[in-house]
Image (cartoon, rainbow, N blue to C red):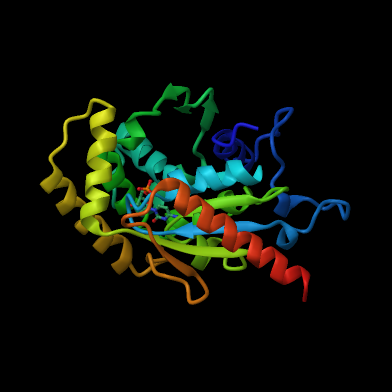
Length: 262
Ligand code: DC
C-alpha cells in the first residue's frame, strides 16, 4: 500500500464520508469482535523538533516493517494552507478547528490534493511550516485532528511522527523515540532540502526560524514538544540515515521480543 495515501484515507473517513472501496475503516469505530483490538496494533511513535529527520526515518522504518506511516505535521500544514487560501486568520481558533474537521485531502501517486488542488510542494514551504506551528498551538485544532490521527492505527502496525505522538496521540505506543539533532545540523539539512527543490534559502534565516519554531512548539500550553518519560532519545547528529533506521528497528525488535517472553 502507498503509505502516503493513508493520510487521505484517514481524512476521508474522519469526515464521515462513506469509505470508498479500498479505503481504511478507522479501527476505533469498528464494532466487530473479529477486528484486532486497537491496543494490540503496534505503534512506533517518533517525536522531535523541526528538521530532526523524523519524516525520513519514520518512512524508512515503516517500509522496512511493512507498517503504515502517519506524517502528522502534514495535517497541521494542510490546515494552515487551507486557512491562508480562504483568508481565515491564523488566530481564529473556532474557524480553524472547523476547517481541521472538514479537511478534504487526497493523495495520488505521491501528490497531495487539498479540495482537489495540488499542494504537494506548497505545504512544504517555510511559510506553511510557520503557519502550521501557529495553528498547532490552538487546542481546538489539535482536538479536531486527534481522532483523525488515531484512525491511522491499522494492522499490521503504524509508524507515526510529529511532536506529540509519544505523549498525547499514542501514549501506549510499543516504542517511543525522541529524535534530536543540533540546531545547526537541522538548519543545514533544511537548507539542502530546499536547494534540491530549487527554492532559495539563507542558512542564517533558516537557523533563526528553527529556533523560533522550536520555542513555539516547546513552550505552547497544549501538547508541547517534550520527551516522554518512557521515550528513548536518539541524537542523529553525525549519524547516517541507515544507522538511525537500524537503531530504531533494533529497539523495536528488542521491545517485541521482550514483551513476548513476559
Ligand atoms: O513536522 P512538520 O515540520 O511538518 O510540522 C509542522 C508544524 O506542525 C510544526 O511546527 C509543529 C506542528 N506539529 C505539531 O504541533 N504536532 C504534530 N504532531 C506535528 C506537527
